[in-house]
Amino acid sequence: MQPAKPAIVFLHGALNDHSVWSHQSDALAARGYTVLAPDLPGHGPDSPAPALTGVETMAGWLLARLEAGGIARALLVGHSMGSLIALEAARLAPARIAGLALLGTAAPMKVSDALLESARDDQDGAIAMVAQWSHAPAPASDDDGGNPALQERSRQLMQRIAAEGPPGLLHTDLAACKAYAGGLDAIAALDCPVLFIVGRLDKMTPPRAAAALTQAAKHGKIVEVDAGHAMMAEQADAVLDALAGFAAGIQ
Image (tube, rainbow, N blue to C red; front, side, top):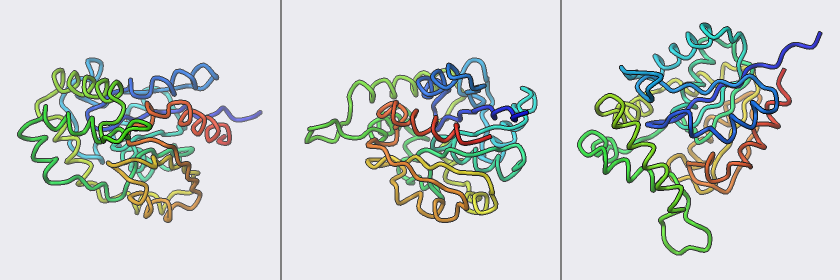
């Protein structure tokens, strides 16, 4: 008997929720995969506060969620902060992880002091900055504003999550990213396949920021897409194709 394919579990980034994965998660569910796209604590009405303050505790929460859902083996797909959670969960429970797909990742994941201070003292201003920096410039444009519609959608999503969640949630998430130091040790110990999807135009986690991880992975593959940090929206089909091809090769 052929073993059942692992569930695909999507992990969102800072001040985001499951909806950033809608295109990819819906398409893969339609192809017959078991799909889970949870909201981290404090990041949506179905996952109330308190928010978790460290990548390690987020990974522990995720593994408990998989256990409660009866998911014995999973392909973890993480974006930005979610990629760090995926790495730490794989370090903690390697037998449960069939593979990792890491998007917009870095080790260490540097967060500027200026952005952290803005997130602490002026969350709305920090949200506007993150929404702009997460998107690549629009095609044939001389400005640095990116796709206005996608940028505004991202800003509105973060504003909603901030309004519904605990105070200072963006700062909590960004500080957790900056503090996590276990990424390189985690990936060096893994024997499962790892897919890196990097945005050629990513300003938040540029491709060079993932170099230490890609070099340390034993079974790594890199796919580049013409997008910024918000690659799941900017190049939705290209990201889906990369994930679908990767998932098809995992048993």
